[in-house]
Image (cartoon, one colour):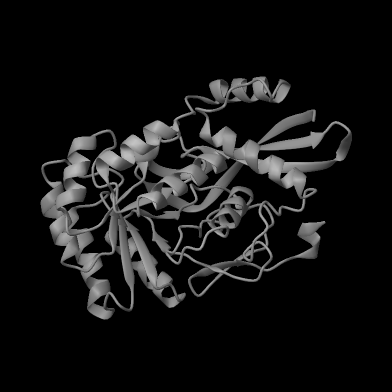
Amino acid sequence: MAYKVSYEKKTFVFKRPSGTSRGVLTEKHAWFLHVSDTDNPKVKGIGECSIIPGLSPDFESFEQYEAKLDRFCEDPTNEDITAWPSLLFGWESALLDLKSEGRRFYFDNPFSRGETSLPINGLIWMGDEEFMQQQIQEKLASGFTTIKMKIGAIDFETELRLLRSIRGQYSKEEITLRVDANGAFSVQEAPKKLSALHRLGIHSIEQPIKAGQWDAMKELCRSSELPIALDEELIGIHSTRAKELLLDRIRPHYIILKPSLHGGISGTQEWVSLAEERNIAWWMTSALESNIGLEVICQLAGNYDNDLPQGLGTGSLYVENVPSDLVVEEGKIFRRLNDELER
């Protein structure tokens, strides 16, 4: 089959500046791939290539990224995108959408058909103590029973105080607390900080130390009472053998999967398979995608029987977003199917 492929750049503006481990974000850039079969050009599929500067392994500059997109659109069958997870994610998504005749049914499962929902965590963005406390109360009032708090932006004692304030109101049976350090701890201080978090009944911590320190991470996973989840550690690992080596060496309690960073749809599916073979639990998380990419990740997660809350509630971050049938209520995300979107 011969394809006609093009792209358009989109910039999404945050409703409020969002603090991350890569600084404060005020806008988000993405490129939408449009693909059609040359024999039927009226039917098009769409996929999102979403990047986070400083984190996405395939993004160095706008010029470099769009040069790759130009080459890919000219000849998608011969341009290698193995090491370009954001582009691979967009391409795989666009092909799946084309197969569904542009109706954004990327997968056929109970979630995509609007029959079931997915539990998700409520994300608390980095910021000062007052702002983080405000977010915590908003998420709890909205019905979330799993809260994920990014830590490492303010002093650790203040972060512990925020977590204690939640625990003072809700037991770990009532509210699940996850934290994401984004590699903020040094190897030397990590054990003490993990122990302090464990005493607060924290469910897990994502990436306590910087990626690439396999021996140190292995020791933390072995010795820590607080379960550890790998996130940035998975970036740039493309081959099956390399994935096996990482999982077998470190033996994490969990892995966090972001298709735009961790090998697209196919790479994410392989990570899931390899993790499950080793009894390593997992959940999926969006990486600031617009509603186009978020829809794909939700439907992909819906392909699996996984009761763990996913990290998929980022569609409301932007002043303007792509129209979507995704709805978040009471800590769950689901599709409220809309005939207009399906057409």
